[in-house]
Length: 293
Image (cartoon, rainbow, N blue to C red; front, side, top):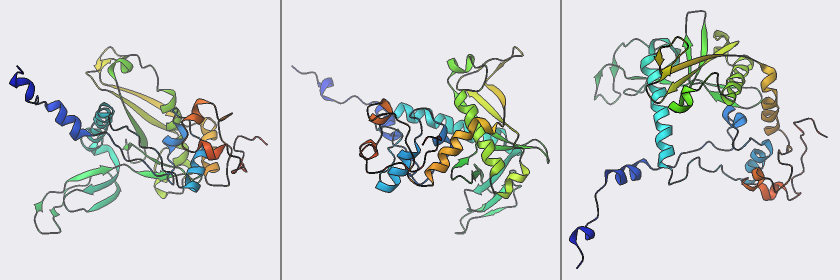
């Protein structure tokens, strides 16, 4: 005889959460080139891949698989901490654009504005503004862009770029210096700011930036012997270290560039969405961004 309990589905909040979280993340189009694209390590960026995808109308793959709700949770936790740093913890020092979520008013390039009263355009609200920080976006002449986690105003004369990284507690505990990928990306951002035609960059210190690591847990002892969830490092601008990334960005905006794979059989090529046309012989390279002939 079958037990009735086996016929009734078990009610689980976990199942509702997984269904509600989902895992599909919108990705940038192939017509957008971001500093993080150039510096990512897995997979390595290939200018030829992006140019072929543009020419052939191939879209970038989604960043998450549909079953990866754990990845979505990890990303959302980092996003939530970034929001708190911008809008609560460093609110009085954060320079950028501010958007009122109630009346849709926008103020550009300032610290958190003083509240002068908010009126809902439909007449349904009279009261305080609900200002939210917007990360400033800058562009480099070579064609790539970068959205900064924040600009911190230490004084009227000293405004510096801030990069925030959320880190698992086991990694955070052993951290002694910024991770190589974060250091290089920060240096690329600094070069982007220094060479940008955006007038806002004239108010920024582009010689160095701050990289702030935040533990997902309680924290660990710092160099002073005190437990803290924060570790901060100063990264100095070094244009020579990021020259290759500028070359790659320039290669994307010109004629068909060379690729980075030595053959169609290497692991990078096997995962490439345009590997077949890349090695078909129909798209010969005309730009040798690494200096080869």
